[in-house]
Length: 171
Image 1 (cartoon, rainbow, N blue to C red):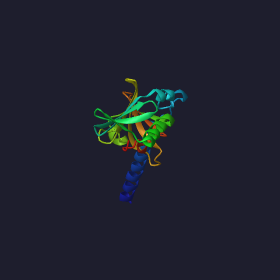
Image 2: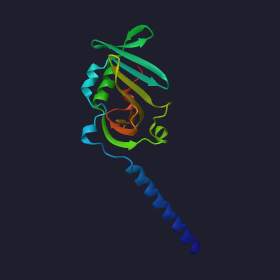
Image 3: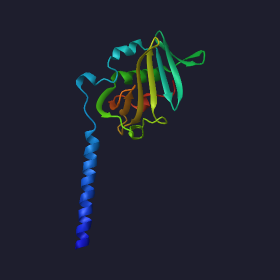
Image 4: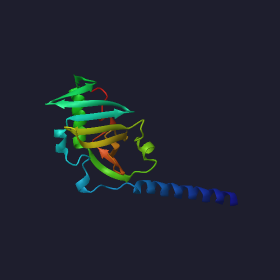
């Protein structure tokens, strides 16, 4: 009987630790204020963007806008960009909404797909002036959201409306 009570006590302790750990993980996420729900705080600035740099595993693609058309810069040559890929990315950035925020921790890169090998970096500029820099990490199970960091901000955002699939490689 003593042995059974010991197993029961250890099982109860394991259950309590699991509940505590789960509630602690959930409690680090907070809802954003209404004023800070948009990933890009002024979506109209996307209309002024002239350069989008997409970096995956250290290799980058530079998209440059000339008038209403986008081009891929390959050295000194400008090749027409795939319009649907650029539209998909800019539309996703326009609708990207922060649904939760967590403080960035040492385990954040691995936990959220934000480490150097998995993240997709986006650098947007308007006539050479930086507009926003974000890193898109892992997508969520529903495929409609992703974990994102914004520049040097010390937070990880759960962003709805922007997923890694929105940043296509076939520009």
